[in-house]
Image (cartoon, rainbow, N blue to C red):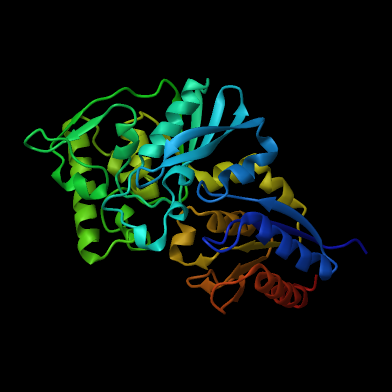
Length: 358
């Protein structure tokens, strides 16, 4: 009898395990159970985007930019071909670039993302895909636009400081230049910019307290009002406009770009639907699964496609809530090391083999 085939979709467990560690641990557990794993490293536009696309990249280049607090930084840009670049925004504005005590979306900026996009365009990119996810920012993409020459001013004409906290005082914008390239944001979530499901729902994980959350929300509302005043109504309500603290909105408004669901885009490029047709089971993991995981993130997209293909799913997640009832879950135990992930994967796969008679 031929070995049963398992599709392993690996991604980073935020701030604990890299995608490669996840892939090794889960694939090893599958082989130990005499299953045949096919391993994909995936991404939804956040952590691991360049790693997921690595087999398709023709080259990588390194460029100078700034981190979320304006410190000098070197970050990579991936190239799908000579004219198509991929920027992973978290490499310039991500939470992973800051120590816990430095996290403050009132002051963090996306300027470094704008610098990276500018570097890619200067190196010949005519299309730039921008992965949106894992950010430490909530500035609506204004910092990115500042790197392109835009200036934000208050009612007295004084230029505002960097960071999401200044948006509430925004009175006018002095336009800069849009990059001479087609910009496409790859969104890890479907949230709009404003409202109860807006970018503000992620403010606390970026370091904001209750007072900061209110100011940040007011600032994003003000940015949406200014877009309306300039004849760009409705951008704030588009799915993904709230991704990466409103960076999705910034690509639309400042960069005349468009947005795509990052997980779907990546999985399509990796040919996951074809792999699902030959799979007997899917194993996917995430550091913390909840209702937001079904709002455009990689795990939710894998669950959706597996259900459509009638392939059962094992979910590995230290923290799991609001999981669809037809998904087998292995969870609990706090943050997992690579060794603990391997142990949990082995236990979950053993349960799945019994349950589904693989």
